[in-house]
Image (cartoon, rainbow, N blue to C red; front, side, top):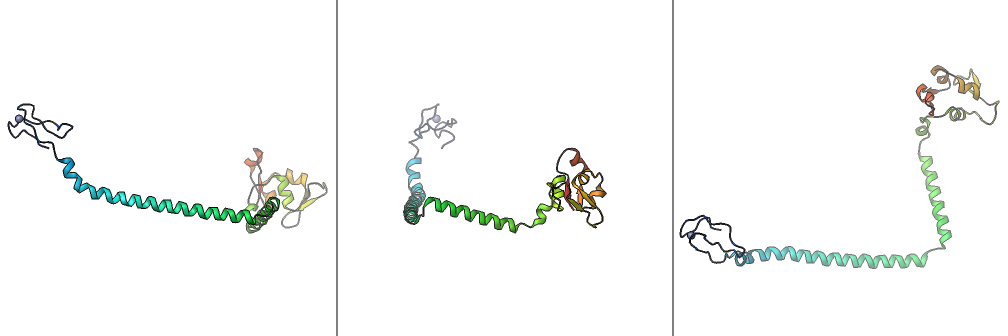
Amino acid sequence: MIETCPRCSTRLGAPLRSGRQVCANCGWSTAPLKTKSSDTPISKPAQSTPGRILQLVGRIVGRVVRYVRAWLGQQWATLRQHRPQPKAQTGQLMQGLADRLSALEKSIPEDVTARTWLTAEQAFQKLGGDLQNPDSVIQTSDGVTTVNFTRFRGLNSEEAYAAFGLEMNRSRRQSNKAWLRLK
Ligand SMILES: [Zn+2]
């Protein structure tokens, strides 16, 4: 692009769409700019290499898709051939799941759950008490004192619950949340 007219030195505007620059003052004009013809030899290989790579990638993707589809078809056919009766399979699945869950339960150490907050009922049972039996009692950690559930629930100090190895949270108790936990 030329800044000024070579004939009258008037400042030239932007080139026309065709690429020609025309001087508004004297009518001088350039030959059509050779952007297209001069760019082509340079850009052709630059365009064609990514193009070829794209084509190649396209073919590879196509091949992978065909391969996966064929493989899936094969798997599906095998699955259908060897599939046991649906009920038996569901039963096996459930059994397997139950076994795994059971193994998972056993793998979780008990003391992880021991620190969760308990209601008075839960704490009483945790310490060996039987809620169904009004005569059932639990012992303080030192074995000196025994209490039934009614007395246990009515204890009103941190120390009293500490004697059972329990931590008491007064504000949780007042807001009716589970309020005892093992120390
Ligand atoms: Zn001019």
